[in-house]
Amino acid sequence: MPSPRRSLITTLATLLLGAGLTLAVATPAQAHDELVSSYPAADSTVSDSPAEITLSFSGELIAGMQSAAVEVIAPDGQNIATDAPSEDGTSITQHLTPNPPAGMFTVRWKVVSSDGHPISGEYTYTVAPGDTAASSPTATPSTAPQTPVPSAAATETSADNGYGGETSGGGDAFPILAAIGGAIILGGSLIVVLMVGRERRRRDRADAARAARDTTAGKDSTDES
Image (cartoon, rainbow, N blue to C red):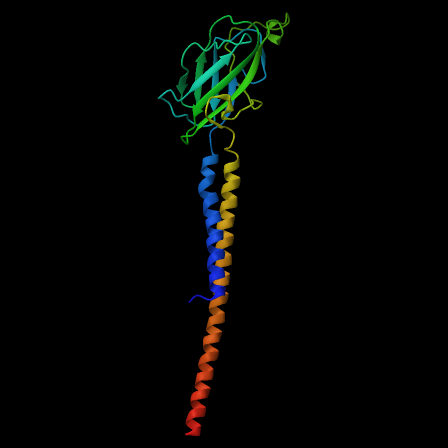
């Protein structure tokens, strides 16, 4: 029958290793892709309504089976996305209805992350003719297409926006959580090794003392006879 001390060691080892393994296995689920840039950028103001918007992510998206969805809600409440978005590696492009009313636009998106989990979010941009540097008399006219601007300020929302995906932005936590899980496993293993070694030494000393007593008792019996 196991001693209470040995049972305690076994229970402690099981709890420590179980906690570490659970955390280590669970952390990859946090490594979803993130929206890293967009055009128009989040919270930006542009002078002309774009013909399309572009969203770029930190990993290659899973394409097909209508896995991506984008809505662009105009100030009058109309969705001006004209068709299904096109996917190209880490980016998706959504074409828009031309000449919508000026004002604030809300972009809502949903994609399938490279780890297989759906993620979603939203952000806003504003169309205000004459309010940007591009319309200033001193500005140099340019016909070159505008390039995507990092949208770190984008507000990425939870599944409550009706898109059914998880909030993106969890990838940065993965290295930290993985390190914590590894530390728990390593620390638990060291504690178990130390406690098992101490128990073994205690048992060896007890066996040696018992053997010494048996030897002494045997000699006493021989002397008496």
